[in-house]
Length: 284
Image 1: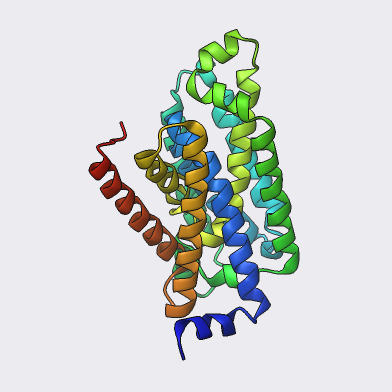
Image 2: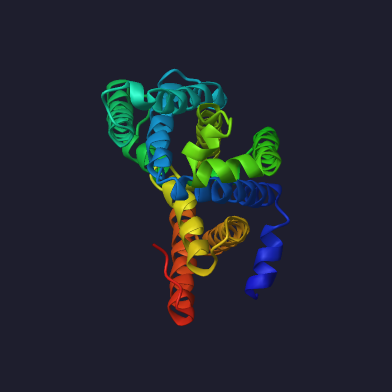
Protein backbone atom coordinates (compact mmCIF):
# COMPACT_ATOMS: atom_id res chain seq x y z
CA UNK A 1 0.00 0.00 0.00
CA UNK A 2 1.38 3.41 -0.98
CA UNK A 3 1.66 6.37 1.38
CA UNK A 4 -1.19 8.12 -0.43
CA UNK A 5 -3.48 5.10 -0.10
CA UNK A 6 -2.58 4.82 3.58
CA UNK A 7 -3.27 8.51 4.18
CA UNK A 8 -6.58 8.25 2.30
CA UNK A 9 -7.55 5.42 4.62
CA UNK A 10 -6.65 7.47 7.70
CA UNK A 11 -8.67 10.43 6.41
CA UNK A 12 -11.78 8.30 6.54
CA UNK A 13 -11.68 8.62 10.32
CA UNK A 14 -13.28 11.80 11.69
CA UNK A 15 -10.70 12.26 14.47
CA UNK A 16 -7.90 12.50 11.88
CA UNK A 17 -9.80 15.13 9.92
CA UNK A 18 -10.51 17.05 13.13
CA UNK A 19 -6.82 17.00 14.05
CA UNK A 20 -5.74 18.31 10.64
CA UNK A 21 -8.35 21.09 10.68
CA UNK A 22 -7.37 22.24 14.16
CA UNK A 23 -3.66 21.98 13.35
CA UNK A 24 -4.00 24.15 10.24
CA UNK A 25 -6.08 26.80 12.06
CA UNK A 26 -3.68 27.00 15.00
CA UNK A 27 -0.65 27.17 12.69
CA UNK A 28 -2.26 29.97 10.66
CA UNK A 29 -3.00 32.13 13.70
CA UNK A 30 0.35 31.41 15.32
CA UNK A 31 2.22 32.57 12.21
CA UNK A 32 0.27 35.82 11.90
CA UNK A 33 0.88 36.74 15.51
CA UNK A 34 4.45 35.47 15.34
CA UNK A 35 5.42 38.11 12.80
CA UNK A 36 4.27 40.85 15.18
CA UNK A 37 5.99 39.35 18.20
CA UNK A 38 9.29 38.75 16.40
CA UNK A 39 9.41 42.26 14.94
CA UNK A 40 8.60 43.79 18.33
CA UNK A 41 11.33 41.67 19.99
CA UNK A 42 8.65 40.18 22.21
CA UNK A 43 8.90 36.56 21.11
CA UNK A 44 9.27 35.10 24.59
CA UNK A 45 5.84 36.17 25.78
CA UNK A 46 4.61 33.03 24.05
CA UNK A 47 7.06 30.95 26.05
CA UNK A 48 6.02 32.58 29.31
CA UNK A 49 2.30 32.19 28.66
CA UNK A 50 2.73 28.57 27.59
CA UNK A 51 4.21 27.79 31.02
CA UNK A 52 1.33 29.60 32.68
CA UNK A 53 -1.01 27.41 30.63
CA UNK A 54 0.89 24.37 31.92
CA UNK A 55 0.30 25.53 35.50
CA UNK A 56 -3.39 26.08 34.74
CA UNK A 57 -3.58 22.61 33.19
CA UNK A 58 -2.21 21.23 36.45
CA UNK A 59 -4.96 22.99 38.40
CA UNK A 60 -7.56 21.51 36.04
CA UNK A 61 -6.03 18.06 36.52
CA UNK A 62 -5.88 18.05 40.33
CA UNK A 63 -9.40 19.53 40.66
CA UNK A 64 -10.88 16.88 38.40
CA UNK A 65 -11.96 19.41 35.78
CA UNK A 66 -9.80 18.10 32.94
CA UNK A 67 -12.90 17.61 30.77
CA UNK A 68 -13.71 21.32 31.22
CA UNK A 69 -10.07 22.43 31.22
CA UNK A 70 -10.73 25.43 28.95
CA UNK A 71 -12.82 27.02 31.72
CA UNK A 72 -9.67 27.18 33.87
CA UNK A 73 -6.77 27.41 31.42
CA UNK A 74 -8.12 30.18 29.17
CA UNK A 75 -9.01 32.75 31.89
CA UNK A 76 -5.76 32.17 33.83
CA UNK A 77 -3.59 32.49 30.71
CA UNK A 78 -5.41 35.62 29.54
CA UNK A 79 -5.06 37.15 33.01
CA UNK A 80 -1.32 36.42 32.95
CA UNK A 81 -1.04 38.08 29.53
CA UNK A 82 -2.84 41.18 30.81
CA UNK A 83 -0.63 41.39 33.90
CA UNK A 84 2.58 40.97 31.88
CA UNK A 85 1.74 44.00 29.74
CA UNK A 86 -0.06 45.97 32.44
CA UNK A 87 3.12 46.80 34.34
CA UNK A 88 4.73 48.76 31.54
CA UNK A 89 7.06 51.47 32.75
CA UNK A 90 5.30 51.72 36.14
CA UNK A 91 7.07 48.68 37.54
CA UNK A 92 10.60 48.24 38.84
CA UNK A 93 10.88 44.87 37.06
CA UNK A 94 11.61 44.98 33.32
CA UNK A 95 9.40 43.21 30.77
CA UNK A 96 11.78 40.38 29.95
CA UNK A 97 12.42 39.78 33.65
CA UNK A 98 8.68 39.59 34.32
CA UNK A 99 8.24 37.05 31.53
CA UNK A 100 11.14 34.97 32.84
CA UNK A 101 9.79 35.03 36.41
CA UNK A 102 6.26 34.08 35.35
CA UNK A 103 7.56 31.40 32.98
CA UNK A 104 9.84 29.64 35.46
CA UNK A 105 7.50 30.16 38.41
CA UNK A 106 4.43 28.73 36.67
CA UNK A 107 6.37 25.75 35.35
CA UNK A 108 7.87 24.93 38.76
CA UNK A 109 4.61 25.39 40.68
CA UNK A 110 2.71 23.32 38.12
CA UNK A 111 5.11 20.39 38.44
CA UNK A 112 5.13 20.76 42.25
CA UNK A 113 1.33 20.60 42.44
CA UNK A 114 1.30 17.55 40.17
CA UNK A 115 3.55 15.76 42.63
CA UNK A 116 1.89 16.96 45.84
CA UNK A 117 -1.65 16.29 44.62
CA UNK A 118 -0.93 13.01 42.88
CA UNK A 119 -3.97 12.16 40.72
CA UNK A 120 -2.26 9.81 38.27
CA UNK A 121 -0.19 6.66 38.49
CA UNK A 122 2.21 7.98 35.86
CA UNK A 123 3.05 11.62 36.58
CA UNK A 124 6.11 11.61 34.33
CA UNK A 125 4.05 10.59 31.31
CA UNK A 126 1.41 13.25 32.05
CA UNK A 127 4.04 15.98 32.41
CA UNK A 128 5.92 14.86 29.30
CA UNK A 129 2.77 14.82 27.16
CA UNK A 130 1.73 18.27 28.40
CA UNK A 131 5.15 19.82 27.83
CA UNK A 132 6.00 18.22 24.49
CA UNK A 133 2.59 17.47 23.03
CA UNK A 134 0.76 14.18 22.82
CA UNK A 135 -1.73 12.22 20.79
CA UNK A 136 -4.56 14.20 22.45
CA UNK A 137 -4.79 16.17 19.22
CA UNK A 138 -6.22 12.94 17.75
CA UNK A 139 -8.91 12.70 20.42
CA UNK A 140 -10.57 16.07 19.88
CA UNK A 141 -14.34 16.24 20.14
CA UNK A 142 -16.49 18.09 17.63
CA UNK A 143 -17.16 20.74 20.30
CA UNK A 144 -13.42 21.39 20.71
CA UNK A 145 -13.02 21.62 16.94
CA UNK A 146 -15.79 24.19 16.71
CA UNK A 147 -14.33 26.19 19.61
CA UNK A 148 -10.93 26.24 17.91
CA UNK A 149 -12.49 27.17 14.57
CA UNK A 150 -14.48 30.07 16.04
CA UNK A 151 -11.54 31.48 18.00
CA UNK A 152 -9.12 31.07 15.07
CA UNK A 153 -11.48 32.73 12.58
CA UNK A 154 -12.02 35.57 15.06
CA UNK A 155 -8.24 36.09 15.30
CA UNK A 156 -7.86 36.17 11.50
CA UNK A 157 -10.77 38.61 11.09
CA UNK A 158 -9.41 40.95 13.78
CA UNK A 159 -5.96 40.85 12.17
CA UNK A 160 -7.41 41.79 8.76
CA UNK A 161 -9.70 44.52 10.12
CA UNK A 162 -6.96 46.20 12.15
CA UNK A 163 -4.10 45.47 9.75
CA UNK A 164 -3.05 49.13 9.28
CA UNK A 165 -3.02 49.83 13.01
CA UNK A 166 -1.14 46.63 13.76
CA UNK A 167 1.39 47.59 11.07
CA UNK A 168 1.91 51.03 12.64
CA UNK A 169 2.14 49.58 16.14
CA UNK A 170 4.67 46.97 15.08
CA UNK A 171 7.15 49.25 13.34
CA UNK A 172 6.93 52.51 15.28
CA UNK A 173 4.95 52.38 18.48
CA UNK A 174 5.96 55.88 19.58
CA UNK A 175 4.80 57.45 16.32
CA UNK A 176 1.58 55.43 16.40
CA UNK A 177 0.91 56.70 19.92
CA UNK A 178 1.66 60.30 18.90
CA UNK A 179 -0.80 59.88 16.01
CA UNK A 180 -3.59 59.13 18.46
CA UNK A 181 -3.51 55.34 18.43
CA UNK A 182 -4.19 53.75 21.80
CA UNK A 183 -1.03 51.65 21.79
CA UNK A 184 -1.60 50.29 25.29
CA UNK A 185 -5.00 48.91 24.36
CA UNK A 186 -3.73 47.33 21.15
CA UNK A 187 -0.72 45.79 22.89
CA UNK A 188 -3.10 44.39 25.46
CA UNK A 189 -5.36 43.00 22.73
CA UNK A 190 -2.39 41.32 21.04
CA UNK A 191 -1.37 39.75 24.37
CA UNK A 192 -4.89 38.41 24.94
CA UNK A 193 -5.02 36.95 21.42
CA UNK A 194 -1.60 35.36 21.94
CA UNK A 195 -2.90 33.81 25.17
CA UNK A 196 -5.85 32.30 23.30
CA UNK A 197 -3.55 30.84 20.63
CA UNK A 198 -1.20 29.45 23.29
CA UNK A 199 -4.06 27.60 24.95
CA UNK A 200 -5.31 26.22 21.64
CA UNK A 201 -1.81 25.09 20.64
CA UNK A 202 -1.12 23.11 23.82
CA UNK A 203 -2.76 19.97 22.45
CA UNK A 204 -0.82 20.32 19.21
CA UNK A 205 2.81 20.88 20.18
CA UNK A 206 2.87 21.06 23.99
CA UNK A 207 3.84 23.90 26.30
CA UNK A 208 7.58 23.89 25.67
CA UNK A 209 7.34 23.83 21.88
CA UNK A 210 4.69 26.53 21.35
CA UNK A 211 7.27 29.28 20.89
CA UNK A 212 8.75 27.36 17.97
CA UNK A 213 5.34 27.32 16.28
CA UNK A 214 5.17 31.10 16.70
CA UNK A 215 8.77 32.05 15.87
CA UNK A 216 10.04 29.68 13.15
CA UNK A 217 7.54 30.56 10.37
CA UNK A 218 8.06 34.30 10.92
CA UNK A 219 11.86 34.05 10.90
CA UNK A 220 11.73 31.77 7.84
CA UNK A 221 9.58 34.23 5.91
CA UNK A 222 11.91 37.10 6.82
CA UNK A 223 14.76 35.29 5.09
CA UNK A 224 13.11 35.60 1.68
CA UNK A 225 10.77 38.60 1.92
CA UNK A 226 11.04 42.15 3.25
CA UNK A 227 7.60 43.80 3.23
CA UNK A 228 5.32 43.29 6.24
CA UNK A 229 2.45 41.99 4.09
CA UNK A 230 4.65 39.53 2.19
CA UNK A 231 6.29 38.25 5.37
CA UNK A 232 2.90 37.75 7.04
CA UNK A 233 1.41 35.85 4.10
CA UNK A 234 4.56 33.78 3.61
CA UNK A 235 4.78 32.97 7.33
CA UNK A 236 1.17 31.76 7.28
CA UNK A 237 1.89 29.51 4.29
CA UNK A 238 5.08 28.13 5.87
CA UNK A 239 3.33 27.51 9.17
CA UNK A 240 0.39 25.68 7.60
CA UNK A 241 2.71 23.57 5.42
CA UNK A 242 4.90 22.74 8.41
CA UNK A 243 1.92 21.77 10.55
CA UNK A 244 0.39 19.61 7.82
CA UNK A 245 3.69 17.91 7.01
CA UNK A 246 4.46 17.30 10.68
CA UNK A 247 1.02 15.90 11.45
CA UNK A 248 0.93 13.66 8.38
CA UNK A 249 4.40 12.26 9.15
CA UNK A 250 3.38 11.78 12.77
CA UNK A 251 0.22 9.90 11.80
CA UNK A 252 2.01 7.69 9.27
CA UNK A 253 5.21 7.04 11.23
CA UNK A 254 3.95 7.22 14.81
CA UNK A 255 6.33 9.99 15.84
CA UNK A 256 5.47 12.63 18.51
CA UNK A 257 3.14 15.21 16.97
CA UNK A 258 4.63 18.37 18.50
CA UNK A 259 8.27 17.48 17.90
CA UNK A 260 7.57 16.40 14.31
CA UNK A 261 5.82 19.69 13.52
CA UNK A 262 8.73 21.67 14.96
CA UNK A 263 11.18 19.53 12.98
CA UNK A 264 9.24 20.28 9.78
CA UNK A 265 9.44 24.01 10.59
CA UNK A 266 13.19 23.70 11.13
CA UNK A 267 13.57 22.12 7.68
CA UNK A 268 11.59 25.00 6.15
CA UNK A 269 13.77 27.51 7.99
CA UNK A 270 16.99 25.88 6.77
CA UNK A 271 15.66 25.90 3.19
CA UNK A 272 14.86 29.61 3.51
CA UNK A 273 18.35 30.23 4.89
CA UNK A 274 19.85 28.60 1.80
CA UNK A 275 17.62 30.69 -0.48
CA UNK A 276 18.61 33.81 1.48
CA UNK A 277 22.32 33.06 1.02
CA UNK A 278 21.89 32.38 -2.70
CA UNK A 279 19.93 35.59 -3.29
CA UNK A 280 22.24 37.64 -1.04
CA UNK A 281 19.50 38.58 1.45
CA UNK A 282 20.19 38.28 5.16
CA UNK A 283 17.89 38.91 8.09
CA UNK A 284 19.15 41.17 10.89
